Length: 269
Image (cartoon, rainbow, N blue to C red; front, side, top):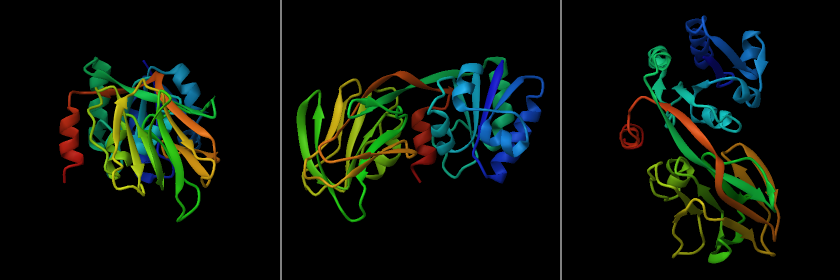
């Protein structure tokens, strides 16, 4: 089995655990992502190269590390938590080695989750594993936009922005602005306005294979399209951002803990 390792950069705890994992897997084929490889003085690979080479990717860090890997990784991810929350991770640091032992024995399942493919003015950009946001590019200024589903107008808003989330991302930014918790097995997208200047505005849940578009009005302030909290693009008045179900999937190694148990343990506090 070929293993890829992606680690939260500049984090001493994550680096130490990564070294322990590398030592534990000394008899296996291991390929390190460039950032941790540089820290350890070893040969490194881009996440795109890892996706072409390895069978399983181990991420060491938190949800941000997972989302970084998911920019190009479609292979199953075994996510080890070295962060405060780590909602998407499967095990905490102390169970990393026992988790790897279970994987080597074949004692695991692979959970697939939907992604959104994203288009800015008809040009495809990165997929969103968690969510995409269209948000004001100017502090203390709101943007004006229309929301369309399969070209049918559902709302016009003035707001700080809007979030379009996958079921995975529903427990992230979308949840913080009043969106629902969504079972990741349900094929829907959540559309959640950010601080709308409209009392009746509420989040929408729509089939994820619909074509969801947000179009800035001709008189709107400029906005930013942000994908999974990482990659950003300028969006100007009159321009359109669209999202729909991607042909790519996010794949996670699971040992049996249910989504509902994860919610109870990590969100209900």
